[in-house]
Length: 278
Image (spheres, one colour):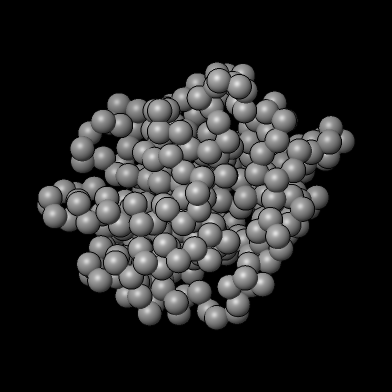
């Protein structure tokens, strides 16, 4: 899919995420909006998996380590045909429903349950190492939030991935610099993130994570690089897409009022129209 088509689709999926959160009575809207473009570019143009190939042992693997951004993942999975949107919207966050607020591997297309932060990368290291040892051709991807990088398990996984030179592994960091309690720098300090990953033997690509063109190029570049794992540091905006939400920690988990819903919907529509003629 070309970049203009991706851009237009992105605004449609953002509206779906907004509608899903309203239907379910809550959701992690800020993080949904910051990582949606990374998910979309990956699933549309780079991840070798479809509903038909979901059981193929040579399929690419993806784990949403930032599991609380499930509303964005639902939107992408439905668009790709793994799930039915009407069913997801009807059942989201309802008692007894499989459509919960975090990844549920009982659902088609979901590789791993997630929610406890810091687990996605270590599991993906295991998947990538298994692929290497079997001589398989699949690639493994994960998206993490920058807040979860405070978990020691992330850096244990990063160390192992560098040691085994897992060039079939690509991690994405949704670097929106905000978490529920405030800025990530308050927890992790101001040491350059790229330098940390490089010290563990990773190739580091830093991009504007709100820009689909830059994300698309980074995924393509990651597949070309050999000899080491790749991390894409996607510098994003929490709540991207509407000024009401952008860059505000209060929108980490927030149910919009109907007035806010109308404002956000209107801005999505305007930005989509601007993208159409850009």
